[in-house]
Image (cartoon, rainbow, N blue to C red; front, top):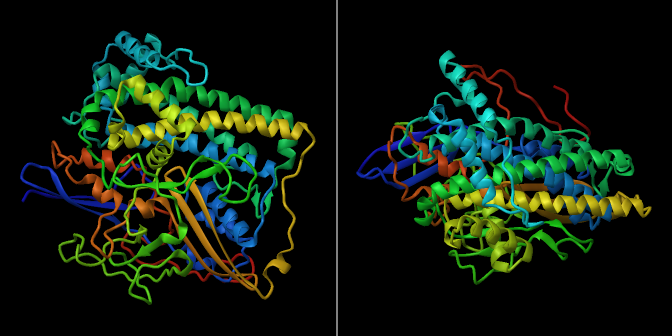
Length: 586
């Protein structure tokens, strides 16, 4: 048997994640363990609260997808109380959530995932003139899926690339590589040419500016970013913003700018990298479970919850079989804690309505590695109808494609044909990265439609943003329960609440990385992270680039927790959170 590789912490993600991999004598991964090393307990402090306050706490589950948890929690309470927000609220929520998607996916591709494919130092050897030609070649392979026009490259002049190269040389000479330091430059798993690397580095820097502009989109209708504040149970509060043509015009200008970057930089760069690494995709490197689940999200009409048309349809695809989509049934979702640092009062997986959050930390083995026979992660192991499944952008594209959704099929086929790829490449690490890019194109175009619909509706005189309801009548002396099934940028997100006599009796959240980053379940079946690593050859076990590349393709986001300790692990403070009546004083 070969090496035991431990990568701890996994960087360029949100949160704390440890990956352990077992290699054979040929340096191929034959076993893997995903270990979340921080505790999250937001669900516990929900108990006893007024459910109308819960969304403001739920958004603190995560420091990245704050708006998604806010939106999902709000929808969860609305579902429990039987409240349907009006059209304007639906459109505003779609636009805020869509803004998060295009911002998050762009940041992920360039600032979190690109360095797994791009050898920064190699760009120093590039010919700027050839780099300009390279950028134009890949942009010209794409046509705008809405207009059919050939795309032009983003900021791709020879002078631009020469300036970027000089800037990079100064960083290297001064020893100030910053975010580009401590990487595995020169590793044999890097395959892009120097010119291709220079194009990617240039767009990496451009994306730093673009992500700021995309963040403004969330703030215009959300009030601020992160942690927007314009959603309430029943609707939204930004009536003055939607009444103001200048504000909606500003949103439209930023959205058009974002679309330009997505189509002229992000998608051509994805096509370029996907073509170079196509052999890995064809081999299914990083495929993993082969089971995909989507809750579906982004309401396209004003029908009751879960009954209308969605931008991303729900469903489950098993064993990569695109001929069959199984209907989604949230009652078939359970969470298991056999290998998680929790305990249940019963010896079986639990549905979130009955879910429990009882920590039981048992630590690692004496040699500091995980105990595969025991508990080894703070993430529970979700199960759907006795299947382990993957969630995320690729899952949404797979489910939509298998369902024959016209929009999703059009965009997926558009990118595959542009690169002359067969559908099979989607079932891989490369395909997971491509699925996110395809979804970004779908989202930015759908946002243009929603903005136009909102503008027309407001111009017609409809300024309704909230559905009135009598909270006491709905809750006093009663027990109600509800759930919110949405899609976060990283995948299927579910919140479940039980309300008794106007207070939260129980609250559970199953986040995308709970599905993907989970440990084994009671049948010893792997989670998506673990399964995706099996069979990956490593060119140098001391440089776990291939592990990072596949794990980053999921865009891990381990929900936030705050620990107050000193460098030696000494506890510095203990805080009491009162479960009733406002916020605690600390």
